[in-house]
Length: 355
Image 1 (cartoon, rainbow, N blue to C red):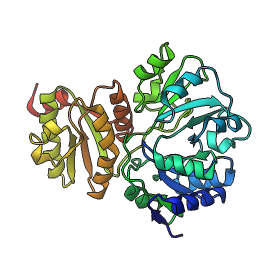
Image 2 (cartoon, rainbow, N blue to C red; image 1 turned 90 degrees about the vertical axis):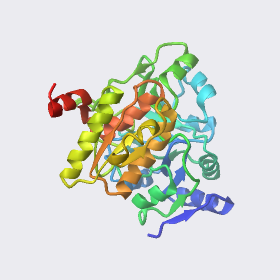
Image 3 (cartoon, rainbow, N blue to C red; image 1 turned 180 degrees about the vertical axis):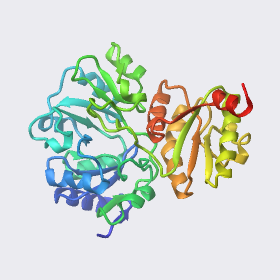
Image 4 (cartoon, helix red, strand yellow; image 1 turned 180 degrees about the horizontal axis):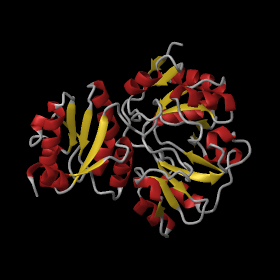
C-alpha cells in the first residue's frame, strides 16, 4: 500500500471522507497529537486500527465527533456532562459516557462506557464534518511508542500500512487529551492532559479525583478504562530513567550517569530544562523547555522522545516536574515512557562519592 501525505484542502478532505466511509484508515492532526481514524460503527475498520498499530485489543479507543448531535447514536448523556461540554468542547477533554449498542465492543474493549471527544484542530474538525461519521482514533503511532506530533513521525510508523495522512503541521498541546470518567461515582481523571483537575473542578463545583494508576502501573486486577494506562507506553527505543532530587543533586547525578554510560559504550543523553542545558553541555542535553513552564514541556515531550530515536540513543536520563496541573500529564507520560524507572540523585551521589 502507498501512503499519501497530503496538505489539507477540499480535495484531500474529500478523499479522507471517502476512505473512512469505505472502511479504510486516515491519520489526521488534532490539537493534542495525530490520530489514526476509522469509522467507529465499522467493526472491521476499527480492528484494522489495532492491526496497523500492533495495539492490544483490551485498550479502548476514543471516538471523535464534530457535533453534539452525533452523541445520540453513540451514548447516553448524563446531566453532569453538559457543563463540561459547554466549557471544554471543542478541545482536549475526553468524557466517558454510557455506551449504546450501536458502538462495536471492539471500540470500547468490551467496557460499558465509550470515550468521546470533540477536537478543536481545524483540520480534524473539517475532516469529521466532511465524513459526518464518528471516528474512533487512537494516536497514530506503533503501539507503545511516543505519540506523533507531526506528520513526519506518523509516516515513520504507518508508511505502507494506511492510505492517507493529512499533514496539518505540528500539534499545539503535545500530549493526549484529558480523560474524565463521570460514569462511576465521583468524577475521576483517568488520564491527565491539558485540561487540568483544577479546571474541571472549577466547572463542576465538586472535587475531581485522580485515578491511582496515573503515576504507577496498572495492577494485575485492574482494567484499562482509558487509553494510556498501560505499564510501558509512549516509550522510545532507548531506556528512559527519571532522575529525582534537588536541582544541584540532579545535575551532578546526571553528569555521573552520562559519564558511566559513555564509558560502557552506550549512546547517552539527558532531557533537561532550558536553564540547565549549559551546565549539562557535556551530557548531550536535549531541551524540554523552561523550568516551571509545564505546558512548554508537554508540547516538546513527544517530539523530543522521537528525536532521541532518530539519534539512536541507548540511555536517556530525564529531569522531572512536580506532578501538578499540566505537570501531572507530563509525569504520567514520562513515568510510562520510563516504565517507572527512577533514580534518587542524592542516593546515587552518596554511593559514588560516599555519604
